[in-house]
Image (cartoon, rainbow, N blue to C red; front, top):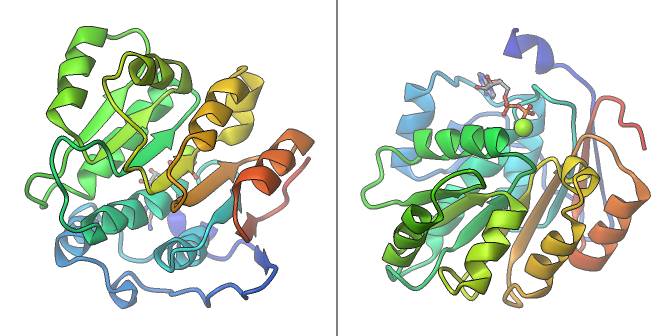
Length: 239
Ligand code: ADP
Ligand code: MG
């Protein structure tokens, strides 16, 4: 699979006011933290894919984002890199005060892939902690990891809510949230958990929602919880 082929797919961007920022076509021009830049190079990414150029620019500008793109277009880095950059901009990062960013994903496997990628782009940073919170793994281990303090949590919705209810983590400092493969999360019945999270976030936060399809339930969530989002579509998106 050749990323260069995907660089030319059609990308459409829509936004009510204010207009969407113009895409930045190179990682160097995105003014990322030098450690993140180093890790991008180490990871072998030489230039952003089309969705990355668009989505990263939007996310780095602080806007909410609704991203519709098929798998394989490089969405993980598109949110992971701005998320890490966002966490570094929260200063000072008090350990133990609760996570700054949260990624919700439909399955354990997907959460694991995302966590791996977040770790790839934060490996040169000192003391940047990412926790994975998924079902089918030891909840006591997760509890101690969360209680020790983390910057980013990558989770499946059910297990994340379990930890919230047990008081092992909190939403009080989350200012960046990503819903990856939101349509699949809804198909799997996670809408109540997603709403529970979105409803209880601090007032000031940035939301990125990615979905391969745009069913009406996603449109409703978007209208309820995203603030003047920039909409990015790559290729054809069915409803
Ligand atoms: P999606 O979430 O859209 O399905 P992924 O984030 O899983 O896509 O990326 C698909 C593949 O493309 C992965 O193997 C990833 O490492 C690779 N990839 C993503 N962005 C780039 C890039 N800018 N340069 C090279 N490879 C990339
Ligand atoms: Mg993905």
